[in-house]
Amino acid sequence: MDHSGEASSQKAAVEVAQDKNGVEQVLLRNSRGASARVSLHGGQVLSWKTEKGDELLFTSTKAVFKPPKAVRGGIPICFPQFGARGNLEQHGFARNKIWKIDDNPPPLNRGEIKDKSCIDLLLKPSEDDLKIWPHSFEFRLKVSLTADGNLTLISRIRNINCKPFSFSIALHTYFSISDISEVRIEGLEILDYLDNLRDKQRFTEQGDALTFESEIDRVYLSSSDLVAVLDHERKRTFVMRKEGLPDVVVWNPWEKKAKSISDLGDEDYKQMLCVDGAAVEKPITLKPGEEWTGRLELSVLPSS
Image (cartoon, rainbow, N blue to C red; front, side):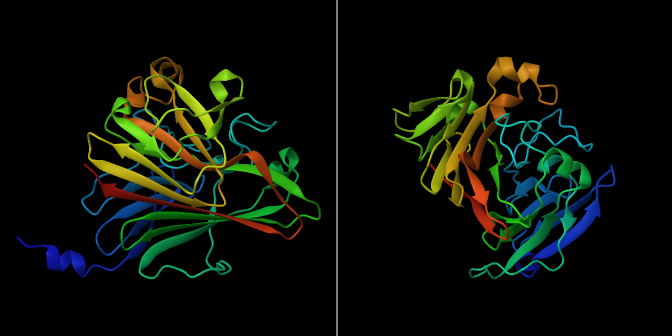
């Protein structure tokens, strides 16, 4: 039976539904049938699928979907702190909060892509947040799925305080891969990186593409705006394009660490690789009224 005419006549769509814990989730679909699912818990993208229905993001086999814990997988947002670099909880609080749908976002100051399905989310600090991080902000997140099936996350953070503040941010993307020992990253060659396994010391990447045979937890500094993850076995390549996010975090816990993470299956490390667009080494400082924009675009291409 030929469904091709049917598929091509579909329209891009945005649907809102609730998960089993009553948290709203937004399903984005493009006209070709690719999709992305975003939870209002954490403003977290939980799924990104091709038009054939292949899932591109990893989710742990032991993921907990109950707030306030962030889901292990997808794209959690680390803000206003990355990791334990500061006095807040690990990776800050944005990924644990319930965001709102922003029905009337201010326009972006650049040309918008036509023919896409998108949602605008908004996070403002609660009274409790202001006690632990006393800065008033508005964090707007636009998640878009283009006609080509690319996933774009545009983050806008505005200081609505009367004094400056600084923050770090990472879009902690868990890519779904065939096998960690079969993938490589291109675009990080000869960069300096901070090694979190060696007390955040600074080293310089020597080799060609980055391949994996043990635990890795690094922040690559001032990278180019294009990074590629090549999955040899699945014959596909993820391409990450970024603006305003100078650093790239690369993380895989490997066997020993995976066993110590309660919401990660013991073997899950083989099927995941975290590559984040981030601003970690030099926090971003905003003056009162100032706004920062960071843009991350993910695409997937067939490769040999």
